[in-house]
Image 1: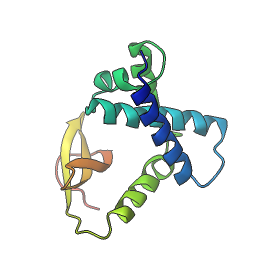
Image 2: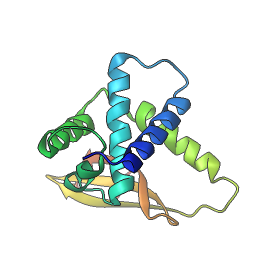
Image 3: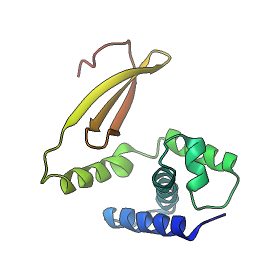
Image 4: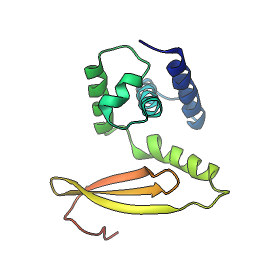
Length: 143
């Protein structure tokens, strides 16, 4: 069941993201925008980051298994690039917080099959806002 409050949150997020995109999106980009909006809405509403927990709070029709698969495909999609779907929002977030002191933490962790993940977090939220994976041996990023 779609709750009116979840739909309002979804519409607000969707409109704000469209405002940040300063161009007319193609049909495919619009579809990706809808998935991203649902993803963000699900995280906000559920206060969780696991896909199984998020999909119950995305105000769209469909089976939960189908929506989990949709999010997995979106996350793996090479056309969903960092510049268009992430960096723009990070730039705006940092700009909006620029009048206060920001404490940034950078860390890394082994994730799977010889890969490590690099993440950058703001201490006040403890939420990663940049994350990248790389197939390397455990240790420091040389870059």
